[in-house]
Amino acid sequence: MKKRPHILFVDDEPKVISSIRRTLRSREKNWDVSFAESGQKALEIIDTVNVDVLISDIQMPGMSGQELFDKVHDISPSTVRIVLSGTMEVGNVVETMHNAHRYLTKPCTAEALIQEIREALVVHEDVQSSNVQDIAAHIDHLPVLPEVYRKIEEELSEESPSMQRVADIITEDPSLVASVLKLTNSPFFGLSHNITSIFQAINLLGLQTIKALILSQHLFWGEKNRKNPPFSVQLLWEHSFRVGNMARHIAAGETSDRNLIALCHIAGILHDIGKLTLANAFPKEYEKVLEQVDAGVSIHLAEKEVLGADHAEIGMYIMDLWGIDCGITMGIGMHHAVNSSSVTIPLILATADHLDHLWIVFNQQYTGTKMPEPLLNEIQNNGTLERWKAYILENWPEITEITGFREEIET
Image (cartoon, rainbow, N blue to C red; front, side, top):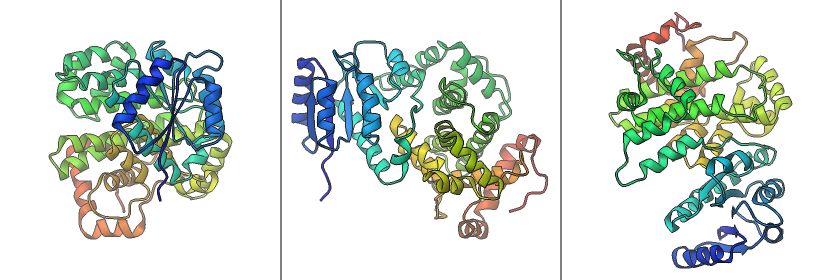
């Protein structure tokens, strides 16, 4: 019999506890729910039961929410930790709550609270199904969803969202504006004229593409607590952006569904983000990973050998924590484990990743990602690989001008 999920709420305000208790009693009868009025009481509960999701206020007398989350990170790393607070600006919450996975602000609707818990439970199930739980226990800092992304999602959830308001949100960060405009005017998009405003970029490229650019900028360049990884972040970012662009073209050749095309693009850009997380959390171990790679081992297999989980699993874990679309998270998590030639996001990502390592040589010693031979043979024999290669080269001819591109393409 499947264990009922256990949810723990912590707040020193009795009215808040009473309100949440009434909400869940009438809305959700499939969870076991506990309440604590202090961090110490919460730890006592966690000592006796397995808590799947912890939702806590931040500023409480005695033990603060941050102190509670820090302790829970150590004693119950698989517990998904969510901030529910109205005591400070969300931006400040993100700055201080290094061991929080998600955050909500008071007042919070019953629908938003329940949806957040349901998504968190999905994450908990995913973590328990792999070695990611052991890895997560030793990661001191996970990237948090950028504030600008959160504001955009809030605007889009309104009854009548405004694209101008979305553009205004992005333009609150001048450095982000500069980065996004630089990227949209790069050869990656092959646009016939320069884009001079974020509003224009949204209309030409689509909001999903802009959101992908925001996430990539934040993850690759915006993390304040990142150590220097034993590889080039610039080269990793360039590879990831190429894979995203190839995945976008492959999808466009298969479907007219703009949302699916955008999902492939985002998943491609973010498919290797787990490498940064692993290298930051385990710098010495990751050097051993790269030693195996230099000896001819594929990087995801070396990560499994040294760390017990690979970057695809960790990347999926981060995206799950953020509540990113399941199509993106599944594509990221499965791009090294896909075993079917059915046209799915994981197959599109795996193929784009394979082609980038095949076409672009930036390090002769680096063992690029190789698709499983049976799958590679299958998509070669049924013509899928050649069709996708031809479509990419026809619609993105600038790729042949990238330094390191091989004139002779072999498979």
